[in-house]
Image (cartoon, rainbow, N blue to C red; front, top):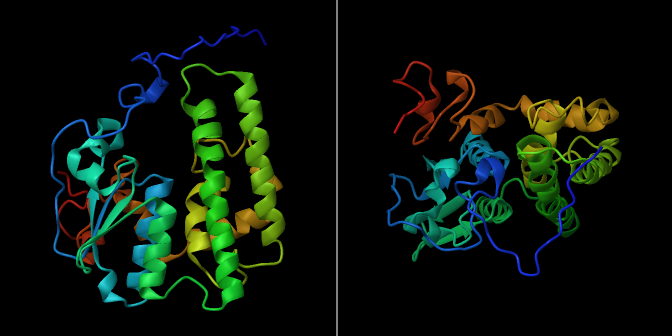
Length: 289
């Protein structure tokens, strides 16, 4: 394969067209770009997000908590359209100076607590409600091992493989080969670990599963980057079994819908403010802004 050789400049300079699909929002600077306050709902927990794999982690956990009858986990979920640059509003940057979804405000505490980074939000909610995190020191540590494994590994899948395979304006063999090899190695790590376990921590479903499933579980069931055939996901039967088990959970089905703006209408719930928002008999369930 013939490809253009790129020789880096001595000092890199940003060009406004850099970034391919994301060129309209990507810049090498931080901070808010415009003034806009965030909407606030009636519940103590306020989530600002989009149904990407990282965003889905949090809505799945919140729906799982509600499924357990924990009414204090009721929440408002407001849509942050990252392709339109909503994450660069002054209000959002006050919650997450890194301008990435998801971000959470817990108004049940005074002063209110902000939580950003999806793994931090999962851990915060699990500890707040004492659910979906093991009680024993050994198993809690094992759960956190896998939670942090996901936080360190998923950028390879998303920003590495996903970008060069699905989003880059040009396809180059070297980065695709490099990240494909690593993603398949990660899938093999999971496959070996899950060969004699129901969930990541044995028989207990935890935030480790909730963190990993939206990335690797959805990937092996064909819902991420349209890459299942390319990655030959049949090589990972234990990951597939685990992924399908989680996919069938009612809270997971609901959590995937929240802040989703693509797919079939019955797969979307742009904003979520009450459990009745999922009811097909209510007014337009997409809650268009």
